[in-house]
Image (cartoon, rainbow, N blue to C red; front, side, top):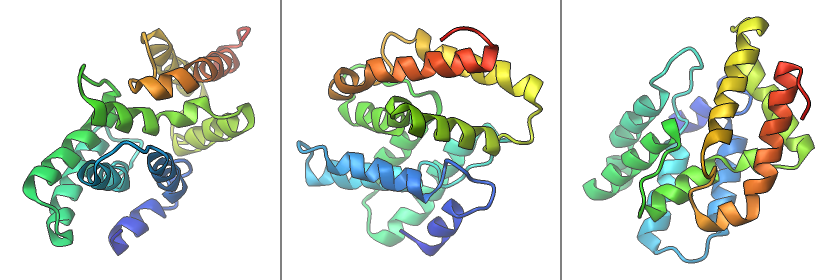
Length: 189
């Protein structure tokens, strides 16, 4: 990790999108045993850079993070094809949609979303941290907008495009999402 990357993840406005999130993603990646050295290196770089630019008032964070990775990675010895793959993986974290037959993309998105399947206490801390990152948004705007985002996730046929993650975490994640939506809308979980 570069010093500028470490500084980015330490920005004071960040509450969830911090170095702890990156370390959690990397720990989940380390637990995946059937990756080639190249795939592991590419995914590792993609996780390090995927939230390098994070400003909740912007809609282009992933694109800017991918551009930053493309600027930084040559100096770290990454080949052009690997850099292009890192950029592609970072961009998948914007909509969390993965095409069929994309195992690296499925892992990237599944690991990035794995917080959704946390135990309720950890999930609630995550939800509070996201709210703090969006502190500039009034409560009466935030609550329905956040509920809509979570509802979009719930409407997806699967949350985790990686089959192993889906088998292990899908039910718990959906329960967390339903519970947060109920808290946001005043409904029953």
